[in-house]
Length: 125
Image (cartoon, rainbow, N blue to C red; front, side, top):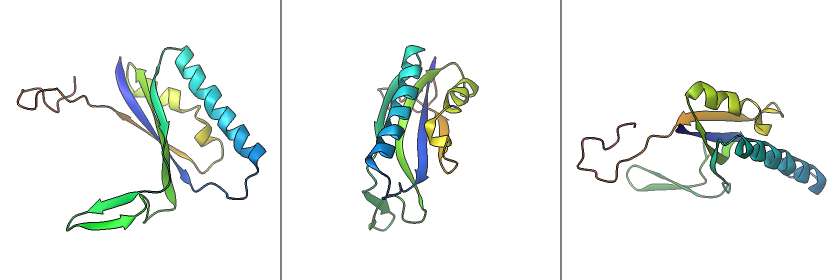
């Protein structure tokens, strides 16, 4: 199996969401990730804070990782799958897609050989 990463993009959460609404969303995510783990496809996941810095050429540093867009990356999940198509099938049931304004980007993870002088460095295994 290969590793695939899913980036969860969405607009900033509604600041007026009730604690109950936020708890329900969290429960949906926990259930979804638990189901992936039960099938043996789970590798790792984390949420990302909306604050940060973006570094650009010529030592330009801006606040926030999403200055040019309303969309932000809220987190990621790494899954094990036999193919990109299989990883996409897993992503199709993501809670991020239920609200109509979320996006899931799925990409293959490319391993980096421990020895940068080797012929395999940056080649997919």
